Each structure stands twice: as C-alpha cells, then as structure tokens.
Length: 366
Image (cartoon, rainbow, N blue to C red):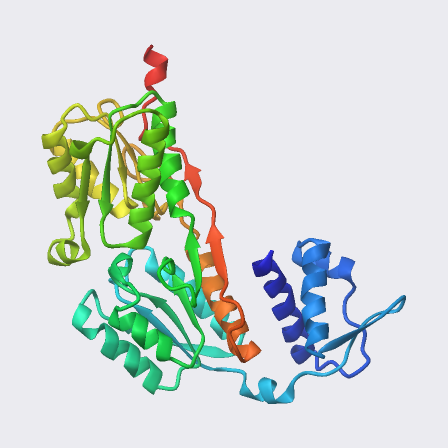
C-alpha cells in the first residue's frame, strides 16, 4: 500500500510540474486516477491526503480537489546526483537492477553515480566517502558480507553520520534506521524446501552463502521447512561458502556440489542460493554422471535470463530485478523531497516459484 500511494503521489507531483498547473485548477478525480494507474481508491485517497497536508492541493466537499501550489524551494532543488554503492561484481542480475534505478532517476531529473569495488573490502568506506564528497543527495546501498554488519561495524557508524537519505537493497535487518527494498528470502527458502517435500523428497541439501543476509534467510527457511516435516537438520547435506572464497574462485557452486555429494551421496535434491551457483552445480552433477532430474533435483533463485535455455530448464524463483531497482529509487526520491526521514520504509517482494523441468516428482513412482 505504501509503495502504491507513493507512486500516485509522485505521479501527481510530476503532472503538476509537467502541465504547469495554476492555482485553482481541478486535479484528476479519484476514479480517473484509479483507472489510469490501476490502483485502489484507498491508495489514491492516501496520496491526495498527504498532498493536502503538504499544502499542494485542497479538497472542497462536493466540488472536488484543486491544485494550490508547489513548494517552489523544493521544486528548484529537484535533481542532482544519487550515489549507488554496490560492492559485488557488476554482472549477473545487477545490470537489470541498476537499469531500474537509473530509468527512474532519469525520469525524476536525477543522475546516477556508481561506486563499485568488485569485492575489494578495503575500498568500501573510501568509495562511499568519495560518493558523499561528490555532493550526492541520496544513497542506494548494498554492502558486501552484509550479514556480518552489526552496530559496531565501520559502515554502520559511517551511515549513522550521513545527513542524506539512504535506501538499502537486499539488506537492512541490522539497521532499522534505513529504508530497504528486498525479497522475503526466508519464505523463498521455506517454499523451495516445501516444494521438494511435496514432490516426495526428504534427502534435501542446500548450498548457500554464509555471510550474505539473503542467503542466510533462505537457509533459515530451509531449516524451518525440514523442522516442520519432522526431518532432522542434515549437517552433511549443508554446504556453505563466503564472499572471500567466491572472490578467490567464482566456481563455488561446482566445488560445493561435489563436497555435498561426497558427504551425502544419497541426496536427491539441492536448493542453491542463486541460479549462477545452480548452473555451476549442473556442471558438477554432469561430471558425476548424475542426471537432472532423474537422479537429483535442483532449484535455484533469481530467474536469470538463460535458465530456461539450459538442459533441463531450471526451476527457480523470480527476482523482481528491474522493479526492485525502480522502487529503491522511488523511495529514495520521496525521502529526499520530504526533506527528512520520518519513518524508514521496508518494501518486501514476495517470492514467486517458476516451475520448469529440474525437479522430479517422486510421488508418482510410489
């Protein structure tokens, strides 16, 4: 609801500027906005109520809602630089996330400046400081090893001292003062494991990244699903890697798959942290002469662009890449133009399973 109401509010503000509304001009009706933006009446009303509270519009009972004035000072300040601190490699799903950010910022008159360290941890703080020194008006941030960031971490202390709005992606549980846009990762891990269980699998493994929040939450969901099913947590089917290992050798999915199956060769299903790792697992399984899904079933995450082309096509979860970037930018712009961060927002996308041919239904054989 909050995200949709912001969409309506920003749409109206842009409309007032674009069409140079004069004081007293009637704005579109609730029903017109509902039809144009495909939102509920409550969403429209919440947006209009906030604009009324800010003195931008005025409602007259029985007559409609009318434009009053824009805050000229804020209007003149609109635009400027927005920083993006992303300390992973700028490939995989990140180009699409960045496109969502940049398209949204461009439409609102802002420009994007990047700080990317390619997992060089020694450069994180200095890169963030360089963004700040360039006069950015807001920051979108996804730190590396973010599960390990606590209240005493240098990044936390730095962010607390910044006087600009900040929105985090795929992170935020350890910093309640920062708005965040993410996915319900724990639910995704639960649903992946539950999907295996529903297909008759009980010997289920997982390969995940131990120092990243999204992966740890997916692991938590995996554990919860097994616990509910009465299956003891199988330590020999759980293999993890971390950011440092991936920086040294990017083929962690390959190595972790071989390690898992050496420890537990009777495993019938594996849930991978993401599609990139799952596709590396495909190669390891082929080398071990294991058929997918005949001998072992696989689920990934992210619906990466080529996962429907591999053999067999990979069952995975949709990642709202472009929309995640878009809404991170929208929330940040709203915080910038409010002038202060009153209540940090948490926008969470729900996981959507994309079923393909990499999971075998064992119940059919029974």
